[in-house]
Amino acid sequence: MPRLSEVIAALENLWPAERAESWDAVGTVVGDPEQDVVRVLFAVDPVQGIVDEAVKLGADLLVTHHPLYLRGTTTVAASTFKGRVVHSLIKNDIALHVAHTNADTADPGVSDALAGALDLRVVGPLVPDPSDPDGRRGLGRICELDHPLTVREFAARAAERLPATAQGIRVAGDPEATVRTVAVSGGSGDSLFDHVRAAGVDAFLTADLRHHPASEFMADRPHSPLALLDAAHWATEWPWCELAAAQLDEISDRNGWGLRVHVSKTVTDPWTSHSPSPGAPN
Image (cartoon, rainbow, N blue to C red; front, side, top):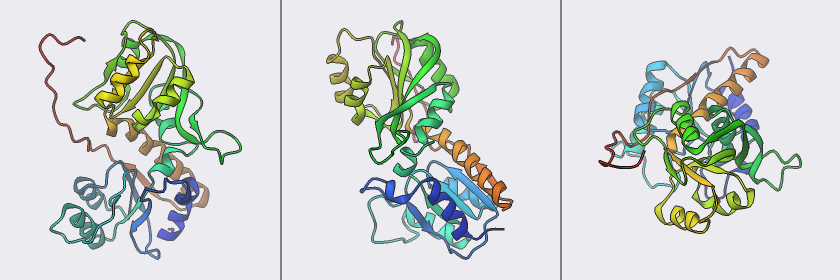
């Protein structure tokens, strides 16, 4: 069985820390480099419920997309919820490794997994990484559908294919407009509107779309068929867990490690219910 340092080296090869944004907090948060690793659990959020699942599973390593301490801290006291996570991990000899924006821009990365879940054909990155000579890495993906759908049909596909959440899929635009090309970006995506305009796609699917940026984007294109589809943040990033687990499985098989790799299906989206307004459009 491999040591943690060997598994982390493999993960860093997939998602090098130096490709993370300067504000990000990626890499190993907790763990002894010399400890043995047999079971690995992938999840989006390093919250207590996920740690409890890792404990029950007997995992030696938890890999999450979201950082535990993004803005730093002065305490890991167990009286705080993040401190309690750290205490639980250490007490149970579970390491924690984070791949965030370095996984967003990887090839394949978070948006490739999102496109795959929606049965889209990836053409290239929405925001190319200038350091990539092959032009495959970058933020978001520009995609094509195998056959045209209406916005309504594409939204229904997204609602069916992505993990179920209370939010579902919100849509801005003509529900009967035709969709042939789509930009996707896992996680918060309204900072990418300029790139979406430049891409000339028919629809943009992402998460965390705010009122003013979305309103201004649609008002700026009053005669455009381009539609916005807003999914739950967690739902757009969860498909990456399955992709990442498959990547580590392949590495394990190649090296003869015999790792047992798992993906958490625990829903950590914070919204738990939804009540539609009477008379609201479908």
